[in-house]
Length: 514
Ligand SMILES: CC(C)(COP(=O)(O)OP(=O)(O)OC[C@H]1O[C@@H](n2cnc3c(N)ncnc32)[C@H](O)[C@@H]1OP(=O)(O)O)[C@@H](O)C(=O)NCCC(=O)NCCS
Image 1: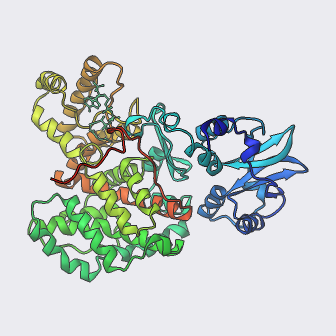
Image 2 (image 1 turned 30 degrees about the vertical axis):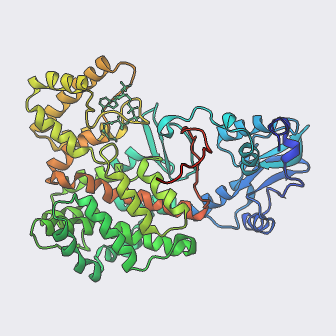
Image 3 (image 1 turned 90 degrees about the horizontal axis):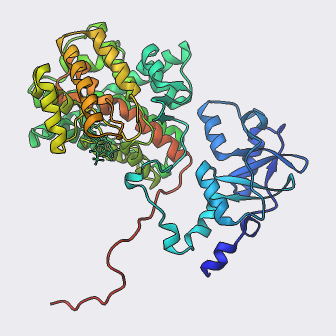
C-alpha cells in the first residue's frame, strides 16, 4: 500500500463497528464474558447511543488484583467519560493522541453518537506500513521518558520527587508498615488486614528454607568462583532453584502457580544470599528463624546474631523503600523475559544481571568507598572537583527520573541520622559539597543525591558488610520484579520493539569468500 494512501486514512476507515458494548448496571462478570466471547479488549459502556464509559482488560486486571467481586457492577470499575475521537480524524493524528495518553482503545463518536472503536493495535498496523523515515522520529537515547507498558504496581514522579506503590506513598509505607505488609500490597493490591497478615506470614515463613538439593549445591558455587560478586553467585543459584523446583514457562502456568513461585523465590532469596556469603567466608550457614520477621531474620542469617530492633527496623525501611521503582532497567528486563512466556526464575535471573551493573544497583558500596577515599571533610572539595573534572561519576548522585531530591535518599538520610555516628555527619557534609559542585560544574543537569548514597551508610551502621549492599537491594527488589512478572503474565503480549537501522545501506552484494 502506498504511503500516501496510508496518510490519507481516517479513523472511519480503520475503526471496528458495531461496537461491543455493556451497560453500567450489568455485572463485571457479564461484561468480561462478552469481551472474551467477542475477542475484544474492552467494552464501551453506553446509555442509549451515548458512550458514558469504557471497561477494559486492564480494569479487569485491576479488579482481580484488588480481590474485588465479579458481581460488582460495571459502573464501579469503568472509566467514566472516556476520551473519544471523531471518525473523520486522520489515522496518524489519532495514533499520536492515543499513544500520548497511553490508551489501548478509544471510542469513535460522531455527534455524541457511538459509531465505532479503534484500538492501538489497529493504529499500530497503519503505522507499520508507513515509510521508515516517518517512524524514525527522535528516539530518546536510553528510552528516556518512553512509555513501554501499563502497570498498576506503582510509579515514579520525577519532577515532584514522589513515588508510590499501588495507591500509597512508598515513603509513608516505609515509615509506617512492615516489609511483609508491603509485599502483600504489591501482590494483592492492598495492605493486609490483621488476619491476612497472620496468614501471609504463616504462608511465607516456611518458604525461607532453602530446598535441600539447592543447599547441597551452594558450596560448589562458592568454591568454584570464590571471588565472584555475591550477585553473580545468586544469579546462578536462582537459575538452579527454578530448575530444581521445576518452574514451568509462565505461558503455561496459572496465575496461582506463578504467585506461589513468586512467593517462594522472594522468601528464599535472602536465605540464599546469606548462605552464599557465609560459605564464601568459611562460616556455617544459619537456618532461617521462622519466629523473626523478614528483616531481623535476614540480618540474623547474615551476621549470626539476632539484630537489635533499631538495626532491624533501619534495614527494613531501606528494604521497603527499594521494593519497586517504576520501569527501572531490571524491572523492564524481568517483564521482557516474562513477555516471551519464559519461567519466573528466568525473569529473576535476567533482572539480577541488570541490577548488578554499577549504573543501576551496584552503586552503594562505591558510594561508601568514595567517602572512605575522601577521608576527611576538608578533602571533600578538591576530591569531588577533581573527580567531576576528570569526567568521573559521583556514585550515589544523579537519577534518570528524579530531577529533584530522591525521596528515598531523604528518608534514608533521616534513618541514618536516627542511627547516628560520625560517618553520618561526614556523609552529610560530603553530600552538600557534591550537590554544590555538581550544580557548578554540571549546570542545568539537576543532579541530586539518589537512594544509593545513604543506603551504604545505613547498612554499614547496621553491620551489613559492603559486599552485601547490592545483594540486599536485590533481596527486596525481587518482590517488585516478581509482582511485575505476575502482572505481565496476566495480560501478556510479547515485548518486541524495533531499532532504527543506521548502518551502511543494504542490500549490498556479499563479497565472495577469500
Ligand atoms: C543514575 C545515572 C546512570 C542516570 O544517568 P542518565 O539519566 O543516563 O544521565 P546521563 O548519563 O545522561 O547524565 C547527564 C549528565 O549528568 C552528568 N551526571 C549524571 N550523573 C552524574 C554523577 N553521578 N556524577 C557526575 N556527573 C553526572 C553526566 O556526566 C552528564 O553530563 P554531560 O551532559 O556533561 O554529559 C547517572 O546519574 C549515574 O551514573 N549516577 C551514578 C551512579 C549511581 O549512583 N547509580 C545509582 C542510581 S539509583
